[in-house]
Length: 570
Image (spheres, rainbow, N blue to C red):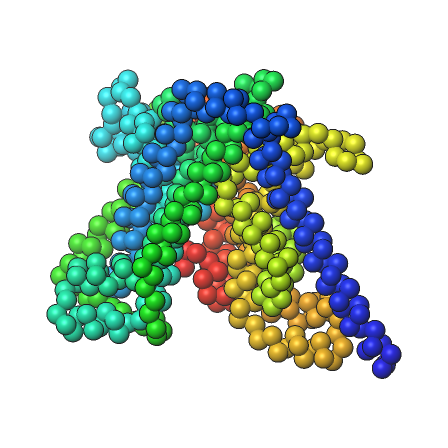
């Protein structure tokens, strides 16, 4: 027995070293190497820096216009998201508004719905032949230009889509503010608006700018909304230009795509850095624990609550109702009635349309595999990040966060460049197969899977693990018997969130799908472009049902999950 215990530490160190090396290789191959290949191809496609080629590309009228358009929609939509998100956070954190939990669920729900489905729902809700507006007698004149096929429509949808991101970060910041500061301001005679502008907002500045950064990154990389609205409106952005560049494949397409993707990445990183710099200026730190701050709305409570629910009805219920109504008629633009009511679109989507069925099965299989792999990787990486933060571990974490922060279409271009040629030793290419999509999922969603797991590790007393180590348990045995049972609820939460995000994903896979490897996310765009609007609506409704079911399952298990693991809970 004594001899066994002498050898156990050596095995433990060896196991930890091998696992850490495996994690480093996992991130290096799936994240760092493709991004480095993207950077090299974008700057020096022939092995040397060709400034003339870069200048000729970047100074083209369509590229210059697309760049300005991308900046415009990202900045303008971020301003809208800030206004809506900050106001929603203040109302739900500090006021006596009733039914907060239900309202927050509805407010955050659009963030869980795929952006292409959101865009499709809004397009059908406000089209001249909208079945819902027709029932209300508010339809637009026949032949009128769709109001959302414009830069203003893109800004509106991006702002509303990203408002929950701002809401979540600002709400977390507001909850950390000590109650005594607000009480002191009110005791000094400051009114509600004065307290709001002079105490709450300045102290929550870091959370507000963090939300702005998330909104900016999400807006500039949101392919679903920009493509569904921008392409019909002939309003080019960098992300749609990259998509169209791939469709018009030519000798210089890969190099040009890499350069455009690199520019999109630089704009994204610049936006994040600028937001971080603003948040650090005049840093205001407060001591104390967050307390319960409650502002009595008084006679304003009924109109404020009514306005909040009208907002949800307009931005959530109306578009989704139009989507459902369109999915229940045989032809787009038909009025929904007993005579036109049909379930044929759902029958075709589930049973008779081979490409949709294969795309759904492909997405389901890829997502399931990605969730299983990422849960295992997140458990081990969470251990090292929580309790053994070395330089190597921090670099692995930074690489994972970079792959998640950059626009998904940038990662798609990187995957094409890295995996287009045959793999070393194996001698075959995975481009055009489901495996390149799986590689992109593993790279893109690792950081997302890691966040709930890190929250789970933060709630564990490490003395249990240390005691088992003293007793002679090896690293793998400690993970199996001590760590995994304790972190399992958080890992389950991360699995659900990754499943919801990856199943209907479009940002990464839109460039990677092929005739033999399609996923369900891009099918909305393909069906709408092909004129099958009613079938696209049925597929969109099925996506929403899956998302709602997963959210309800996760909410039912919320009592066993770390606080904050589920973003839609108040």
